[in-house]
Length: 90
Image (tube, rainbow, N blue to C red; front, side, top):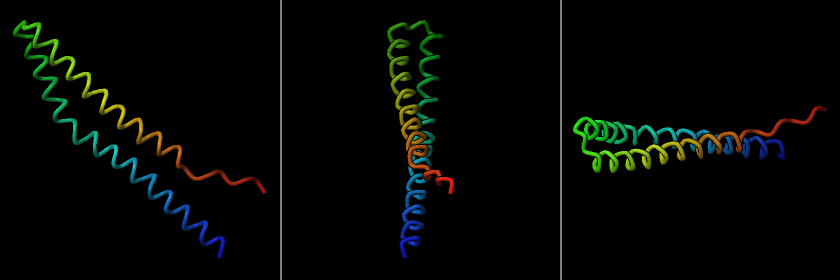
């Protein structure tokens, strides 16, 4: 009975692990179109030589990019922290 409970706990942990990774990837993917549009706006402001607008778009672009990277980092860290424990050599 104890072995079955341990196997169920491992499968739940594995499901949570994969769920968090997939959720972080989905969140980052959902934010990519907005990131691309902000990149285009920043490049457009650079072409027009509008320094104030270019600086503003660059800040917005940096904030969005950092947000996407933080979400991915948290998902990947959780994926590795929740990995199954290595079994002791018997």
